[in-house]
Image (cartoon, rainbow over all chains, first blue to last red; front, side, top):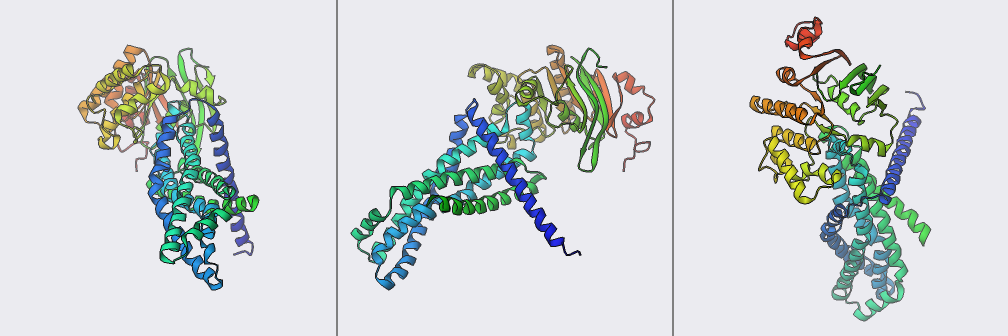
Length: 258
Length: 254
């Protein structure tokens, strides 16, 4: 084994990563171009909105409630050390609006819908259904990818609003009813410290996360090869890549915005 | 030289997938308004030939001419216009499994015809009737047997009554009666509408029955092409071995 071997391996990984980033960007460009060109398939978009949005509602609510609750519990323990229990509400609300709402919602939807996109498109690829679309003169990016991307970009902010709301509710229940913080103070501090700006920036992040998870899910599905095993691989890779990209993008967006 | 009546012409096509050379200088001319049957061994690249004709696969080298025009440099819009003239039956039917059989057959009509809902229903029922699937329209593809899926795929391929239809093993997996029915359907469709058909088949009896031209693929080339009569009386040892189904001969079977 030559001493440069590990470097070569690292180089390959970097090259592969760059290549993939380029391919995903190309898919984004194609999707953007098809967005400008009729026919717009509203029926497909609504179907995807239902799948990505409405059907993710339960998991979003559960995630939100428990995250808000546990966050209240944790901050209470810390804040009570120096008598700042009154700030628990605003801390929970700020964290949810700026970070936890969009990020956790995006991660849950990635697991639910991003994976399903990769699996569905992957199956269509290996059973030649995507080729059948080409043959019938229907562009699969326009028919399959565009509705999923549009639906995700629209629905993620909406889900995030729900997550923010029920998260604060969860924090309220834990803070006020279990830990005995004064209800008026809890709410007043939220109103005092949380700007609409904080919520809007969270929603903007959510839209970007929706773009990431749908694009990655569709990309992995679209370029699936190798039968059932390939579909499994595509699905796993889609979830991992989308989740990591969402977390990385979250850092970059936060650094740029705040 | 392109013969004046060739609707599709493949010229010296080379195609490799990774290290495997699938087509090695293949040339074939498909006469307009005729049925061409391509025979050859499984895994020999017959589907790859069809996919070249419709631009799903681009050749590494060589030309695909449709009506004398090379399709390789066409852009998206032009290739879509071209594909509207084609119908294709895939080997495993490639039905959309999120739609019913009815919706599958209606799909090309909804995309590319100006028919109203009533007319679409009429056409779909007619095509389903032609392939013996009357009353199965509301089923999902997963509820159908392999043979039924194939027939549904066939109904979808002929829904728009395209000029050129590519059939990838239309009769494989069907019982003998249905095989005959499908062969007759291909023949009737062709005679009635004057379409061009390219059929991939292992069913030699069917090939003799429907083909105007039979082409044999062997080792990435067309080694013989001619009328069924010419193929049967060919003195090529490879052709003779294949059509008589003998394990011994110039083709290494195992």
